[in-house]
Amino acid sequence: MVSRVIPVDPFDLVVFGATGDLARRKILPGLYRRFVAGQIPETSRIIGSARTEMDDQGFRAFVAEAIAEFIDAKKRDAESIARFLDHLRYVSVDAKGDSGWPELAALIRPDVVQAYYFSVAPSLFGDLAERLHRHGIASPEARIVVEKPFGRDLETAKALNATLAAHFAESQIYRIDHYLGKETVQNLMAVRFANILFEPLWNARHVDHVQITVSETVGVGGRGAYYDKSGAMRDMVQNHLMQLLCLIAMEAPYRFDPDAVRDEKLKVIHALQPVAPEDIVRGQYRAGGPGGNGSSYVEDVDHRDSRTESYIALKVDIANWRWKGTPFYLRTGKKLRARASEIAVVFKEVPHSIFGDEEGWRENVLAIRLQPNEGMTLSVMIKEPGPGGMRLTEVPLDMSFAEALGEDGADIPDAYERLIMDVIRGNQTLFMRGDEVEAAWAWTDPIIAAWEARGDRPKAYDPGSSGPEDALMLLHRDGRRWREIRE
Ligand code: BG6
Image (cartoon, rainbow, N blue to C red; front, side, top):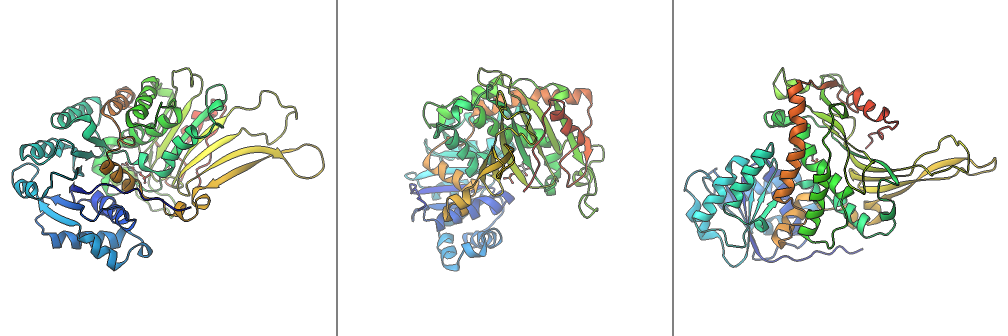
């Protein structure tokens, strides 16, 4: 299979916060990979910008180091790095003052696609938006890209939306949820809406329940100060898991078009029911784990009394015709047994078994693996081979995207690469609209407010485990079980 690189128009992309962690780890190396793929037009420029004083050469050296650190040696070479670096410029600007802006204005070309990536703290969004306008830099079609966290509740999200809306139209704002850039996540839509096979079964009559798991092995790392104010609910559920749930649950949009897709996702969020306290389990990792000497969550965030969750599992119902009666179980956490993310659609049993009470009888499960080893497995029951009557056994119809797609599958672009190219193309399908973000907070806020009012403490769990014991009960009491977390 030959991978197709769709060309984009020439652009000026300004990365604010160009010396920050996200730019170094994801944005700049991702742009290099797109360059190698032949997707960056000859006349395009990537303009780094931050408060740090630096010249073009200094920035190029910084980016060269980032490429060496984050791009596999087999996928980079000195010649293409040198050619890529030629596209780079650097301007130092002060987000809160006027210095540097006239220089930036002089550099930007009005007749190419303009994109401004705000890879900075949300408290600076307003300042950047305002100065881009005051200095007459942004063209009427310019696009701005903003990162999560998009607010920490409905009120702050509304305020951020209003700040951006003061200078940019919704059609110019690209709110990144990097999960939407993951190959398998987009494949969810392809699987659902490009095959006739699943749709007739995709409803409460045939689906017993859905499990969405995003399990991480890492702890909170150096982000303790941010994370302790967020917790797994704000950091992962309100955005990433919510987006996955929407793609599984939404109706077919009338067209694969940004607003048509986002309208359907929004309807799902509106239909999410409040979550009862007994349907939530929050956890926090203690010290220990494999090797026995890992630090605890409270040590990692340096907050002895912290009640923030590093793990959450919850059950939510969707009140609409398609899903009434099919619970969705969501779980995510840090320092768990394996890095494994998957969506499992667990179908109901056959209405009547002609084989009697067979041992080993299992439901059909469609499991979509997001990472690692992206792919899909459909478990089906077959006859155990050999004589001796009709015994049944479960076998997987297993498809690894890497194997199925050959080289193309092995070289799946990183989420950021795809999303940045979508910004340049002006395609908002994989970005969150303002009303979607607000609706997600409107569902999340009362859940958090309720556990804060009760003064709930998260349950301790061992690093390297699959989370707190109580999370098992969440399914056991409904006569169900979590799928094993495996890499
Ligand atoms: C980020 C969260 O949005 O997603 C992190 O802030 C989390 O806490 C990360 O680790 C997970 O992303 P991925 O792509 O590694 O699954």
